[in-house]
Length: 406
Image 1: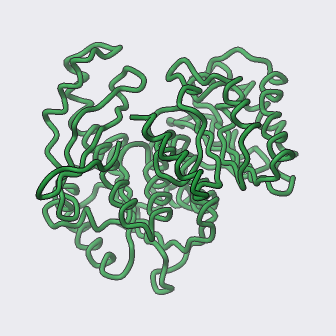
Image 2: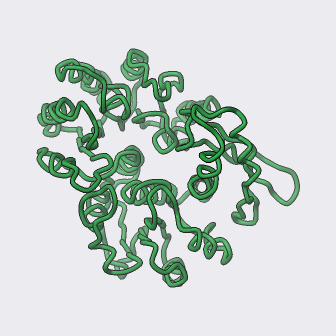
Image 3: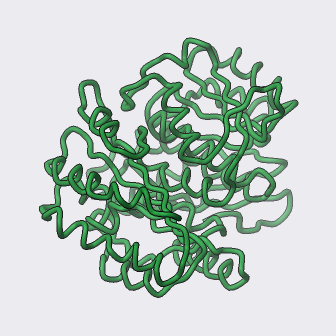
């Protein structure tokens, strides 16, 4: 699957379509997925090794040898090997900073723009102090021309120090992590997107959502800043409406979505549950034929994850109908995995998962999308655990079959 995705990225580069480099946080689906969208050039797949972490010499070699107009990069991937490693890898701050030096070397050598994000670690990370020291030491970078630097905080449960620590940094910060690469790609490729934000209920904007540690409206504002987007009112004719669904009344939400979709492209973030969507809302969307008309959909993670993913994909594929449908198919697979696939696998198989766990594909319901059915041929477990999965999807027209996605 991923060699095919890499080939797509290389083809786009050869055609002059991909002038943006993307160095993901790790190779889990939310982070690696943009490598298959035909918009960016990514490191070789072999440079990422699942829970073992990235091959850092290989990442640095690729980076310094590859030119581009801009680079969206994870600091934690280069410094520690990925998000998991950043939490517990024993490494002195000076050594971590030295590992980030190739980013400035790339900028000097190729002259491109740098868009960088680092993660303020969650409550249980044993290397919290080291990571914060590194992030503070990068403060001078934020003042350099052609560099955008920000910090995101990871899984802030109640009482977590991460929001306070992040706000203490002298450059922008916000909640989230696994959507950060996608959001900065939107900033890189479509800056200035005009976005109207609509909430299922007005009180939702003031709700302190799980893993964020602050009111939802502040999370949204931070995401818009990260994306280089501008918030406008519905009456100002936005390019995109970002709709936040909080799990209140799916029927009323669908009526509101129908009214909005008659006027604007709408990206839907389902915030009803963490890592899972609302099956009642999805049933309405499917039954009324609305899902395929959305600009984007996300229900795979935390509120910030879903809002950022929906915003980024909605903006990046606003004028690309085929890309929009492909992203919707991927998003539906992520919804289905959280609602059906993951629970089924977890009660039947220990981890690391055996090949037999792929039998869950028999439960795929076939997604109706713009007159086609999307079939799930197979799936894989990139980290050999049930939390995430890659889907091998096919677009099934009324006669014959053609490849759609992975």
